[in-house]
Length: 179
Image (cartoon, rainbow, N blue to C red; front, side, top):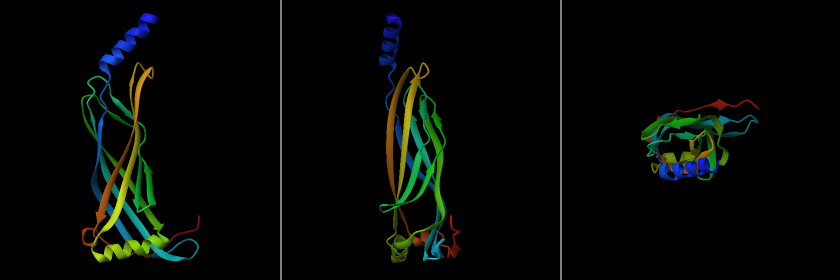
């Protein structure tokens, strides 16, 4: 038994995979609209509808082990205010190569209250609307089942700047039903 443990340890040290290189790239904006609306309680406010897709690119440099990626969390923020959140599927990046996965995040008919006016002012000023995409993922290389595993957590931020003439601004008039 001791010799098996020593053999596994030597194998693991000899084949220990280097950490993967992870990056994100904006793939597209499906819809973006900021307009006047009424929330479920009857308060007039700015209503946001936004969705976008991103490419998660993982360069797995391990020649032996595939990379298991737990469902990534994607968050879209305006300043400190998160307004969209999504969880992607479980992913797998094969050994010795680059893998690209498309992930989506968005919100529909989201009341923005005080932030909505600031967003509208920034769009109309022509300076752009600064948004942040945050992607958090937990990954692990596993060998011999879960007997030997190397775990890592990666957090990525991407800063976006929407400019009004670059997006299709739709005049929205929404009413959100109370929950």
